Length: 254
Image 1 (cartoon, helix red, strand yellow):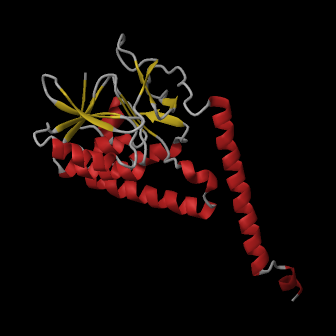
Image 2 (cartoon, one colour):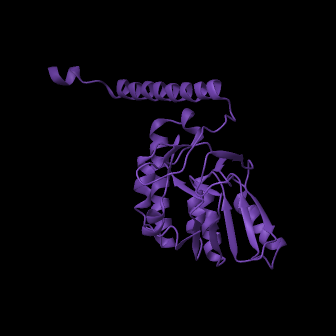
Image 3 (tube, helix red, strand yellow):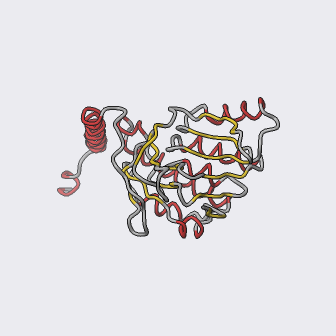
């Protein structure tokens, strides 16, 4: 009985869990606010250089894509991408649909509308995105596969964070050696005010969804192991061998 008397009551245990969640939420919120105060909401991307095997982790900024048209391989300039994904037709020798910008909540619906407005649209989609909503990226990727579209990441373009799920949706997937394709941990902006147990459940469900999705698309689900080892403030740039070994790209081109 003496031991039982020393055990906390159910009410005390619940109160302790609630206090812990409040503390964790406060710490996360403080960190988010500090980042905004220090960097602003649209901070400039840091200088980045070409990647090589073993030197592939770079700082991540969703709206900035590195590019350098004056040298072979991704360089250290940046271009600002649209705040929401935009779809357009490019008049090239080989016509292509351009999908550029952040993957936002309405992106999948806009893609459906774009195809309805352009029934003769080409069957190739060129991607240039810093990522965005994972759930929407998976939905878009399925639309791409169901529509029989091929995907590509062209020279000086980027496909980062959740964008590789769009790339994975292509029936054929080509990536330029002068492009960036990168992955990292899933990040949810709302985590600073979400109870910890809900955040953990959401992340676990998201990881399960992506594993099932990649397997269905013919991409090695072990790609998520690299993503899970890379914190959300960084991005891991895949080199040619990894793109092919994971089957995220069916071909790497100049």
